[in-house]
Image 1 (cartoon, rainbow, N blue to C red):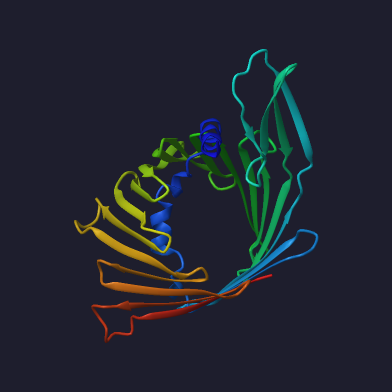
Image 2: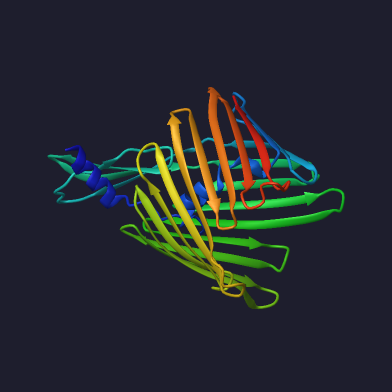
Length: 343
């Protein structure tokens, strides 16, 4: 019975595909995420007030250059209510119930009684999210989000930027539209150009096809275009992307071997550059539920390793290092440490 309900739920509530930039996300995360040598030291502190306002402070000490950081405050307005729709049917021969969840703005229930066959749909009226950030570069950033407020499946973001020292201003509008087997995004810079970058992805039974294009309104010309195809399953994903006006090609693969081991690789080639193909190989091994190690190496002989451990609830330590295996005597090696605190 449980498997039958799962099949019914999957049939009537298919998930949207990933965004265009996330078609190769599993392999990209394995190759790039949680390698802590990229900065000498990083610090992140998160906290949440009783009224729902959350705070985040980031600090980063680069191997070369200045130390940077930012403080961020975010407020999420609670859902404002529930809108009910009720549709009656004369004949109904199956049952389906989809309870509401944190990630969904609606729930569906089919009611069958001797005197009534009907579908009851409950839409949760989403609220507003406000995020404000102040960086060490003296940049004041504001983001306003409306998720499922304008239309079902549509998320709108308004981003503003202000530099008090130079009086420079910026304004952007981002739109995200998700439907079963389809996702589209639009990123518009309202003051520069204006310009627009639009991408879309279609998905069907694990197969993904996506495209991206950029347009400058003032110049009336296409500024960029890319394409990608992929195949995704719970245990593995594969993707081929063509970016930079279809001149840079990349093929990536990710495999979750079991609950402890993950492996992935990526090959890239720039058709306008040399004939050399870049190659990266990475693996992740989970030591226990609170710690893991990662390692990777590329075709240039740069090897990287990382270790992450949850010291206690809310406190995470990360250690990382990279080595130039072809120039071990040179001062090209890097080490880094990462601290995360959450309350």
